[in-house]
Amino acid sequence: MTAHDLDILASDRERSDAEERLRAAVETGRLPLAELATRLDEVHASRTRGDLEEACRGLPRPGPRDALVVDRRPTSGGFVAGVFGGFERKGAWVVPPRMTVWSMWGGGKIDLTEARFSEQDTEIRAVALWGGTRIVVPEDIEVEVKGFGLFGVFDKRAAKRIGKPGTPRVVIKGLALFGAVVTRTRK
Image 1: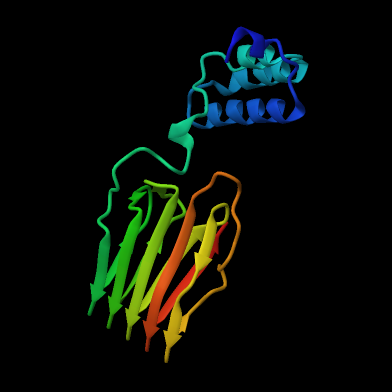
Image 2 (image 1 turned 120 degrees about the vertical axis):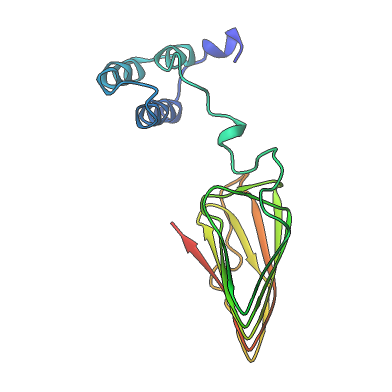
């Protein structure tokens, strides 16, 4: 932020963002709870962006490391299979830009709710042959489902959902043959 930017009048949205930044700092142990009330008073009394920066002094700025798209290598391979067994990818992990998921006489789960993405666009090819795959997506990303079920189900309830601007886009395509590929949204 330049010196000129610090003199610009603060908006209600910027005050709200500063409040959230302070609350997050308390939750992560960066800011003592006793100091929160004082800092919130500073935020509410602020007139300029510089005043907001002063209220948030000593705290990290939200930035690319908090974004869903990160500049890191995927932590999972591009191929996952459950053949006469199962698989699960969940928690904090970095999703590859293209991923193929096979469920053959078995099943698996791909949970993207805590994941970060290595690229803006991600394609998941899901194939279920006498098996099942469950894909869980967060509600704030764009999702498109284009699969086909032949004597099976390729569930499209999360299909064509528009996410918030700048969030990742996930395209799920593939085939369910005597099996199921189900996509669900977790809030």
